[in-house]
Length: 377
Image 1 (cartoon, rainbow, N blue to C red):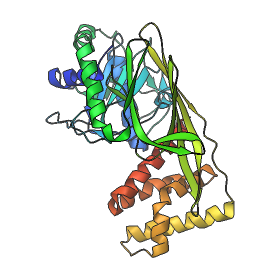
Image 2 (image 1 turned 30 degrees about the vertical axis):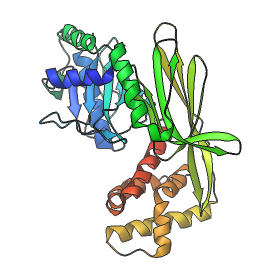
Image 3 (image 1 turned 45 degrees about the vertical axis):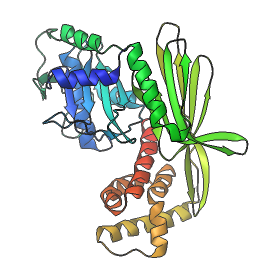
Image 4 (image 1 turned 180 degrees about the vertical axis):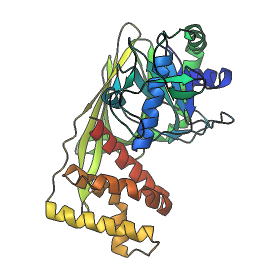
């Protein structure tokens, strides 16, 4: 089993960007430009390495390899995006890798690209790239090229050596468990061993609601691979497990005018097998709340007026400040009730919310995370 933190260290230490490895400070697949660039790099790495894995490391400075981290990116539906835009799509996994020196809410993103037989190309237009385009790696750059020659396999031995040096061991596992238990001691940290091999650690602030147990500020990590499986500072989560599986049900708090309910968003089941493998199945179980359209029209117009005030740096009234705290979530409710124009308005609001308040921006990011799951499903 590969220790992903160790793998990232080996990639950063021994290789500049090349035909099997790329690094990014950040990506943004909520915008067409960011989505197009990401798909281009996935396509190029898949075509340039037909026999081995390729990697994209996210959250690293380009010049000096300094690890700065990115926000936890919980997107189990990223394969849906790949399948929608690429012909002969590779198998793509996005994983969140914690590093000890990073803040709790930051990780390093690791994208693993495993090609399948055949040439990968764009199915349809995205940003400035045309459907039918084929990309390859030219050194550290992803370039469009005409495919007319057989691809030589020049990286398999190099990639195999890097992966072999990143294999996990007992010492790394024990160190990982102790680090987690010490770091999360204020949030009831626990661990469980599955199949005498997998070590899962989790923590959260526990609360009882109507004879049900929920956790907030949840952190769940698979220590063998140093992968953070779940992290949320806001949402409530229900946790249960058996001898063979660990289940997470994530809830999202939505409502209007100080009347809120918790709705089931996603069920994630981590199943552990006897052959030292595990699988993660994520199912969206969200049923969007429905509200009166007249009420939503009023809220939508109020949100637009607040954003215009922030844009023009005008002072908000007390009521507008109250509405601002729920602006991102109420835009989301409008979108889920058929207001398609609420989506670009939410994206437009991002810089003004970010500049106004860090706490408000954290709420905005949680809303975007929910939206991304709903859209890709």
